[in-house]
Length: 413
Image (cartoon, rainbow, N blue to C red; front, side, top):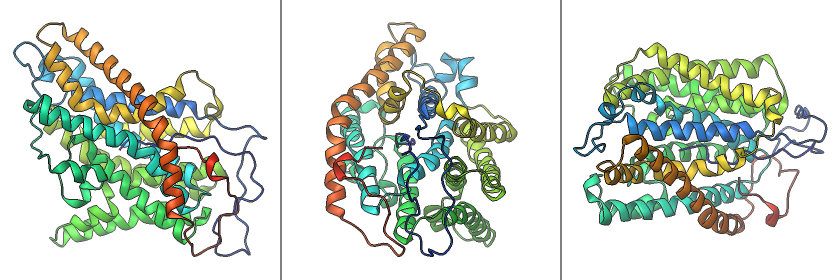
């Protein structure tokens, strides 16, 4: 899934940010902030939309489908030059996961487990429910020729967002990332239940990818299936999230050699798995067989982009329109694949491919704005408050959070 948390503005200089600390004898490091201003992280919102558009163009102009032109030309044949670039657009998913590791920790550090659950449900589900129902109507009623090979009975499991763990197919193939994101959220929730501190986050950023990779290669080396390792530790993507967590520690609490070591280690793991997964998938899905080293370089560039935005003065830069870009990212991602293909099929026989592509992009951005305005904004905050109140205050093994806000002021992040 895309990184679905709106990068929140940090509260100025909290009086005491030690949250759920098991040992009160050694103080946690104080956050390093510029006076009482709040970082905007506007460019991070813009980067999220760029990542989403990279995935969109990958699915529309490079993926193996035959929806272009009067006779159904393959995407790569319709876009012989553009597809050479957009065939690597799928790495936008890796960028989403890096940003998610940063932003989810930024928005959850200091919250109670109940508020974290409420914020995730309120942020994720309204647009997702709409997308599942709308896409189901498209594939089962309007355009069954899109051929998703799904059954209407799959809709109910898809509405839970846990279909990946239930062994049920996705109504739209892009939903596969949601299960990966959901497992990351479950790790964060477990973390919050035992008490989230700076030291524990740092240990976790090292231990999670290391343990997952050790188990994966040990189990595979023994000739055993790695399914349970993939489900629990998902080593192909864990370093991307953990690298984002290391960036959060550097951003919020300052620079130390160990925090930088965590970032470098996870960038290395992330580059290895990005090359392993994306080189194979790109060749399979687009026909372009690029060197693995290209994807290694891309992975390091993605980490560097996020690091420059959050660790430099760019974090404080105000850029008009970036908040809107962030708001559009999630619904664009949810809707773009099958609805975009349908638009392409309808218009390609009558318009030039350039006009079709421009119209499809405009339609997706417009639909995303409508979903944000009429689905997310009215439904997200009350759903968040209801879920938070329903879950209640969960006990943790450490101390309770020192800082609490009134429930009605909790933003949907």
